[in-house]
Structure formats: C-alpha cells, structure tokens
Length: 100
Image (cartoon, rainbow, N blue to C red; front, top):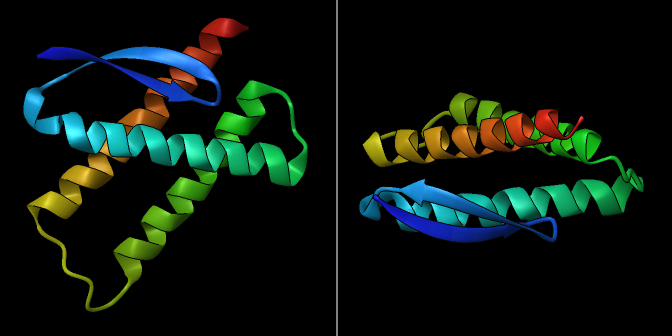
C-alpha cells in the first residue's frame, strides 16, 4: 500500500492504494474531477454536496448504460474499474457529509 495525492475540484486528497490499483485510482479521480467541474460549470451550483451528488448521478447513469449495452466486453478489468469508480464516488460523498 502506498499514499497518493489527487486533486478533485481544487481540493487535495491523500489516498492509500495498492500499487497495482494506483493507475486506475488516479484515472478515477480525474474522472470524478471532470464530472464535478462539469456539474459546477453547467448548472452554476456552488454547494459542494450538490456538485458531488450531481457528478455521482451522472457517473451512475453512465455505469447503468454501460451495463445495459449489448455486445460490450465485460471482464475482470471492466468490473474492477467500475468498482473503483464507485468507491471514488462513495469516498467523496462521505467526505462531503463530514463538512456539514
């Protein structure tokens, strides 16, 4: 296990991750950052909890669509990536809950 620093919506987070999961977690953090920025910019919402929930809903919709897409390959790597994305969303929502 090692520590990594990621930046999501202009805030730094230190995470602990297994070495083999590091690239995917960094990618997941970048995706969460991208979604949160998109929600903030598109809706002009400024409350972090609302931005996080909006981003989580968008990511969940994409996950559902990916699960329902016929002919999409689904192997261990695909499932692992989805779990990482889900974990990243849960982590951010938990952090947001602690702010209020």
